[in-house]
Length: 252
Image 1 (cartoon, rainbow, N blue to C red):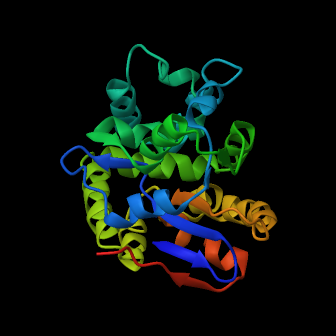
Image 2 (tube, rainbow, N blue to C red):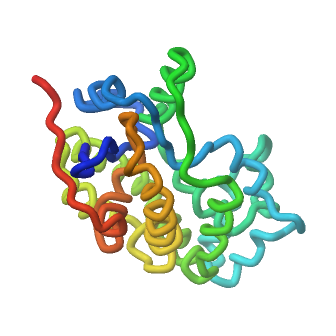
């Protein structure tokens, strides 16, 4: 979960973007990793992605209706916010509906990145991002409509799944158990469909690895903070980098 790229000044940290509201604890290696770093690298800047959630044409999300049962489609519509930046459902891109829908059934608080970013801004610690909002949107746009519909259908059949998965994953993450995080994730509709995993994890891992290669010879201590799921399973970021890593253990 906290790894040194051997022979470099770069470390990888597997994060959780959101914590369950019932458990806000962070493991000791989070603070230690932040203090070690002279510069931070995050995945992307979430606020810049918001404008991409809505399609240029209205009723874009209607494309999903043929891939959902009538009951699931009605349920999705009835649970969607009626106002705010995520409304109406019909105007969202299909991938945006997929990304947002699980969060409607979760009770969460901010995770690792927002906490680190706030500290970095306060302390003037340099930070950068691995990808732009355009690149995130392009990756997610590649998810097949059939996969989006299938995942949303599974979600509508088990509305407790997002919170249950988040709590289990957070517990495994606190223990630093990366294989357990992966086992829990692949039981979730979001990641057990190949088209979704490819877009959210695999393709982005390959792109990130190419960019991180440029950092490997830099002298400053650099902490790369990515979601823990990017560090496990087939096509993970560590494999894409094709470099040896060694675990970093927090001081007791």
